[in-house]
Length: 564
Image 1: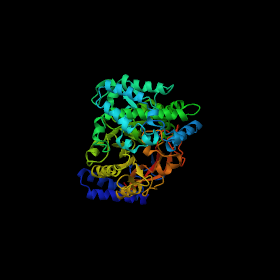
Image 2: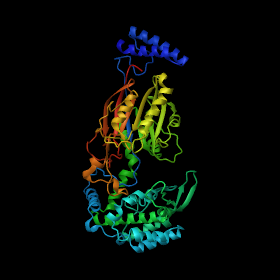
Image 3: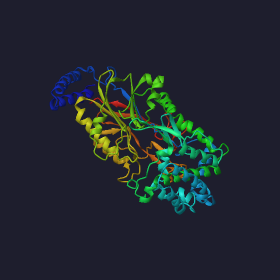
Image 4: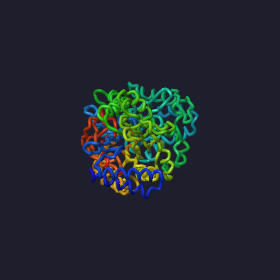
């Protein structure tokens, strides 16, 4: 015990001598005297957080970090682990159709016919769009005679110009005042069914040009219009591959491209669907991956992690707070801290605090102060970071806690950690506050210099700040917390990979961390979970129908060191 108390006494003496704040110096001086006395009298220091009167063993804080992942509009976008023969046959069939189409690679106009083009042109003219005639001419010169796979689906220029992916992003799944509505396409959770190709086309036209929806503007105003009114120009300033003429006619041109894209999907799936049919399969997957995602996420938190002290969560939808509140156990045991935002960005980092451990009334949100010091150009969006201080319930010791979701390439991670570190050093260092930071760092095993964040470089950086992590001072690059890959049933085929390419082309990386200062804590019992049952199955692609995220749950136990 004397050995443990000497460093504590010394640190308080040092702070007493060097502290800049007179009141804090006086406090440190008094604490130093008591700690010295306790050292020689072998009595525990009253009120010392993370000390026990019996056994002299410091208790532990249990922590999880989990990017629960935003709900994906397209249930087919990523390969999933699904023990279903028809799913495997369908996805393998789509892969083969795209990779080796052979004689199935027919001309575009045999699928998206000239009759369909003229019908669509009439609707776009009624919409009042300029460039409809030029769009028809563009189809004749750029699409007619080209094939559906090599000439359209695999056309790199179309991808660079976002001519199909942009209208898909806008109309795939639309949040309206009355709930979500879906474009009639295979790559979302559209609730209707298609009896035939012509039936699909009729529903597509009705949705885009006839159906009225009410959306809410950023100012809170309700706007009623048809879906086509949401289509925006594609600017060459943002997408340099777009020509001036393509930009001018981009509304009708991108709408035609979206129609061609969807018609190819309907045509392809009709040829390869299994006994149950792709529409029934999609319905089942949407229930598990989309409609019941939040329900299953709450169930995992309650049943597998309902005893942890701190939950750091990322990519949390605004509605998820309501799901926590409706869960009797989690709502009783935890306080959910959410960032102060304008509510428009439905993707936030949050913290859940165990009520029996923390004084939730003492929470102070310091996020805005940390944000204010970010350098220009750091890719951090509203809601990506939450930073708070909170006191322990029993000892009144203060903690600084932060939850963060990095950008896709991880380039914001080091700047954010740097700024969070600077805030702590400048504002909380002398107060004896302890620091814990849960984050989806979006780090990569094989990073591209200047384009993606290397996990080894990140480890070297946080250790240079005196930090450690649950993954150690030198994180293992192959300690993966993501294992996912895009299929061929989505708009960005340049990012698709075959079953055989998961490891080489998929997102298989060590992305998730819990950081702390090395002098504050040591970590143990660190584990990963991609099942929701406190188990991690190596080389299993996820999400699955029972594990609804593309990030593993990261669990660790932090044991407080004697020296503050």
